[in-house]
Length: 218
Image 1 (cartoon, helix red, strand yellow):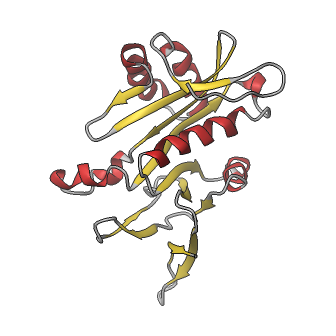
Image 2 (cartoon, one colour; image 1 turned 60 degrees about the horizontal axis):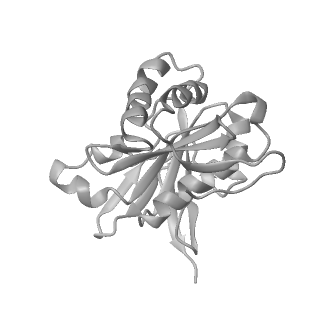
């Protein structure tokens, strides 16, 4: 297990283990506060954690649920997955080769009494490191419009916040032009390149629409 320490008391972060499903469910509902379908969304993940631990098999690739533990208490969680909606836009036979182009921070939550202590940053870093080690090029998170504090939190951790409906345009490892957007459902994308030297630049087309485009610097 990869772990780090914080001041008073020690906190460790690692893959969720069987039996943590209830804690993961409670934290997942915090992450989806205000989403009417939160419980139905979280239930399958909690069941998978209790059955498989943190590594949850998906149709393409796998999700990883990591938890922050303080003694016997689970005080935070992060769940990273391949972006299912983006993969579904491609023919089925192409999806396995695209699994590591992008990863999504689908859920990230810290229990109320432990917020502001650095646990959220620890969880995000562990999630990023997991997908980076698999060769993933970009990590994305979706932030509801108007949640400026959350946008600022991600921005301070190296993410670029896209405008509403503003896509990321990039070329896949196989040389195919591609894009991902916020889904036009009231969210913004927060995007971070995982390769050293890659930054995102905003470009505006002649018709006035804008896109985020990765640029590599030596």
